Image (cartoon, rainbow, N blue to C red; front, side, top):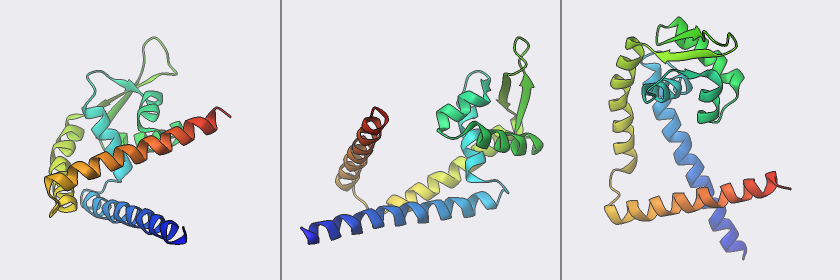
Length: 153
């Protein structure tokens, strides 16, 4: 039993290590354009929206606090990547939209992240990718189930 526990701990450590390395590589690429990864996540989200969105909707979609979104929105607006306007019907509702500069940044960085992903998965064949995909889905389901059970107690 102890060997199995040790193996699970090593696997979890390996998973966290890969995540940390992936994040460091992405952060390095984002530093080249003087942007934080979380700001880029907002840009990517806005780029895929057909309509303007609110800060609260962004926070909900990205699963981060509204306060964190507010800080990022200010930086992105100052940099000219997004525009923020008060809604005509509700002054508490800020409509957020990506600007042309923001869209250009998303297009430019799309290749950055594609290259990161290609590097991450290089040398892994199709069968291994399918197994990995299945394992990630199962792990996410396992943790989602636990979190839901804890919320209900």
